[in-house]
Length: 182
Image (cartoon, rainbow, N blue to C red; front, side, top):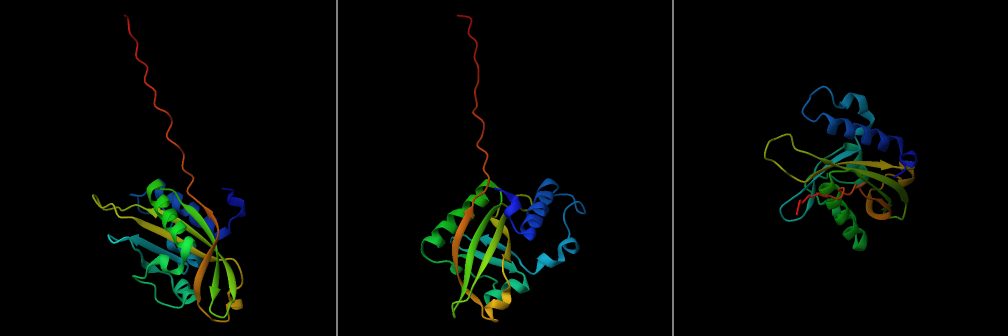
């Protein structure tokens, strides 16, 4: 994916995620909230439950305001319908399984028909607790236009406009040579 076409906040989150991944055990070496205070309000974490729901575990205040509700324990996929929902469910599993981030571009719509473009960065999180292997994803909900166009109305539906799946590198072929003196 060409990262030059991404919103600067998306690039910042991807860079921070790379630093967290490079040194997950070392406190003080990864990104800190004071370095990215303007992003905190738009960050969220979702987790896959045993019944297949990608539930919000936490979400920034601005994101909750844009979506018009407290998001704790709501299903992330409830903001999507039809084929978009199916595609996004598969996308979330690909992000988790590949342990690589992906980007979703969408159009958010209010009940009165106002629209705004959105870019969501979704990156897998690994647990620091031994033996815990939960499917958790860190997300950034980035609006690409002036939110004042929404006139204070919450976004109630999203429609996918582009999906940039994780950049999965295939495993190199495994070849073993055997020599025989027969």
